[in-house]
Length: 373
Ligand code: SF4
Ligand code: SF4
Image 1 (cartoon, rainbow, N blue to C red):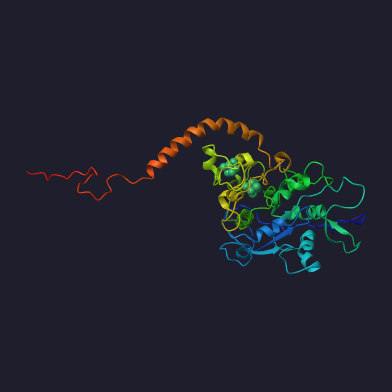
Image 2 (image 1 turned 180 degrees about the vertical axis):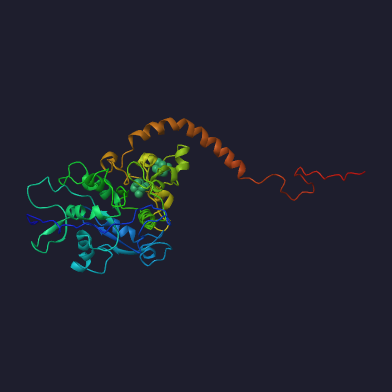
């Protein structure tokens, strides 16, 4: 049974003032940081899948970032409980220091997992992290966020749970959980003037996250403009296109050639793929080091990056309602186009007729006659 009265972390003093993010270099702001901390709380409602996923990043890898393999970045101190070698109080020390305003360097707050509503129950708690030294009670996850968010130069919600609530927030859940922007407010701004940055995915595509972190580190260092985000606070260059627009199977869709069972190379829309209306770059980018990418490798897109996930896309294996209309409209066109392309394909699969061993040149070549004066 969970303890009854969890206590909040020690009160925060004013956080170390970060430099203005996005400030161009050489225009006079006081301090471009040499060190930046990444304080990564994975104590929302989650499976830790985003922490695990990011270990597969290659563009850039975690190692590239923390070992200063990328020119121009400040020195990065990554504090993630899945990746750390420290445990217990030694691991928590930078979090406690940041909550007191004594970390001594700017920090990026990364939140993994959805944030429960601790007000919707009479006793106990939904999620906590670390222990209050005086009361020996857990410190609530949302209290950590309350303490750390105001001083962060940027706050990133990693994965769909932290971004929009995800699976834990689906209909019928008892926790009332939500995404980071729901919790802090969609108008919330970090100490450097940034809104919450959402990098959704269940789990997050590893390079999408590391690329976003790298962008923000350059921004903190004054070497990049304000990160471009869409209305759902996603980096636009990562989430501006649909799955369908990058899918290896899109050619089949275009000529209305649909799979009726798994194992087929054809378009999966009739098996439940939501790719045409889902913002995600995974089919283009692949999953690990360019390999994989849901529909590319045989799985339907179940829309795991989307704010409406999962409720708006269930039951997962049913054909999406809108697709039956586009499939029906495309059928006659697809039949004609496939037939015509089949004929053309057979034609261009034959060699031209003048490649033979006979004694006549049949290429149509005409010898040029020299012009005489
Ligand atoms: S499998 Fe999905 S994403 Fe790919 S072409 Fe078909 S509908 Fe589009
Ligand atoms: S392709 Fe679809 S299921 Fe796969 S990661 Fe993207 S949104 Fe999620």
